[in-house]
Image 1: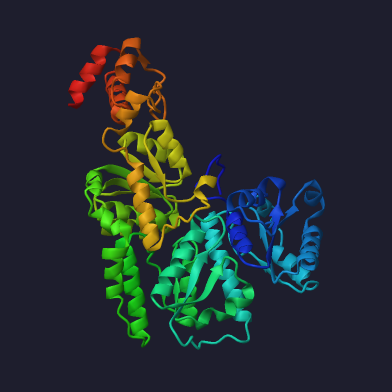
Image 2: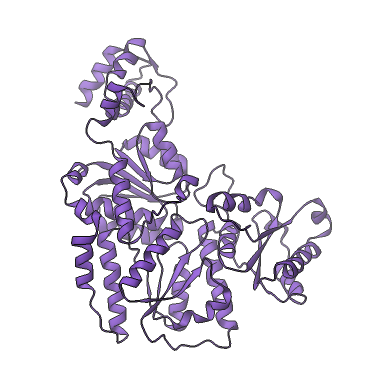
Length: 506
């Protein structure tokens, strides 16, 4: 737990609430102060769903601090049990209310005596885990609870190959579009969908999970613990190769083929992969086109959650020939996996593992890439530095919950990503033409560094000279001049200093 005014991954209770609100007919009781109850507003705004979020806040106020909260929490649970008739009520404290050190397990036990619903306390350490880790743990906990509870659990598999998709949940990046694309992919492979969890599914259907031939985990951050649990407990194989990009889609399908063959269903998907790659996929054609040649050698940086950062980096380097200077993630718990994945792509790519957005902003300003691929925060950094940014990972704002169909997974996802990458780079003399004919570069750009050097004074002549430089290289040249001035302990930048800096960098 730490105090911050902006975070890549939220507090643990947000992760628990994301999973609880994704299931159908599950209600969550959040035990915490009013300042922690922003989930309802956030979910309603971003997800654009018609229904109210099934979250109730059991407010910790001065009366609770004086008398204790057991009566209030139990009353809230029993009231929602009667009003909503949920299958499951899950209780979660926040990191703030956890300071009270109350026996919430006892609260759940007391409430269960009076309710028809199942009552569960979220088993996460709110001081030590992030939103994504808590969501991953909560999903595993719910599945474990209902598989243990079921009297009709069977290890018998479906007649035809089938799959569970584990990783459909609220407030995820392009998630519903990705799930639609996965449905289409499995349909093309003649694999039936057994269950998709948790989004829109009932906890009553969790007993059917073991009927599937294998589990598919599209996102490492949420669902991986469930996959490993089902593998260990019920010997269910799983695929955790995320099908982002043509090369990774082929690897993913090959892994599915291997599992089916090992289970006695002989199948060969080579022709399907070849047809999709050569004749159907637009991104595969684009990577061989003359347009894509413009991207070769371009410099970029990537930052996001582990799944998307690695997936985008593989496309940039292996499919489009872009030079990725560094690739980073805020998912510290996936550090080892992340670094190992980068080593398989290119040993020269520097791994960055941090959740400090100020550090990331300074690293971007330091290397001045030609494009950024990151989160909402990196988009803000790009605007300040006049560097284009393609958003490829949560956290994001509402514009990255599109109404139109924009998956990132599968073959259509590969097309969407190729468009995003190509359109994110400033190509040719695009900005220079905008400057000539009137456009976004006609205004003075005098603060292109992330942390403005207020100690440096630009003369009127040097400001005019700076505006003569084409927009697509102006910010880089400005930072080089400022760097030269700082290194030589100069406070005022004149025309002579500009020319000296140019000579030094030539």
